[in-house]
Image (tube, rainbow, N blue to C red; front, side, top):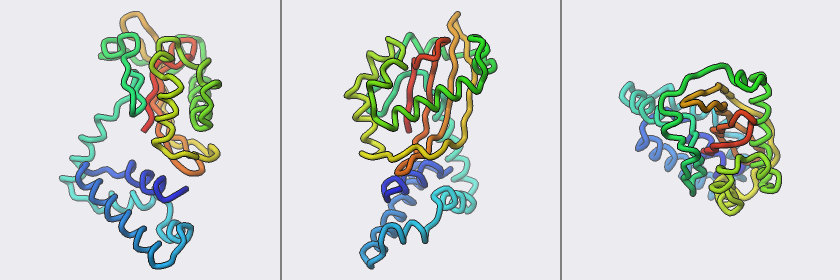
Length: 219
């Protein structure tokens, strides 16, 4: 993991206000820069600072109640995305806003006679393909409407936001899946954390009944 990915991995786990998060990131970047200027290698700095999850946890434990409340409010805005959004592109897919306004939830895969594990495995395949930056592999996984928004240039730009080289996909973190039905349409939504060699990305993926991607959000 390079230093940019390390800082990002810490920042995304902070449960505080946006202002406090920005302040902590500036301090962390300053500490890293000072250590590198003093002659430490990045590998030494990373080893000394420890796992980014632990760094974030220790910071969160010392937060005031006001900061915790602000953090919870900020986190509530991160809902499962069924609008195809990839940082540089925001595209409404099949009237997503109306469809998902008041969804009826069910076990993932139930409407398609699939297991929850099958839905999750498809989401993991998406994370693997996106990490590789191989659009030729990704395109068959997209619903036609989603493909109009998630074009190859859009996906390349989105990929670059997390680094030029994500490295190999190492493992998956927390993963949640559910079936969603609204206005006669049924699909599945998956939220998962993918841990690559050089970065960590949280995916929000919407699938139709055929497990084609109808919505994709990366953060």
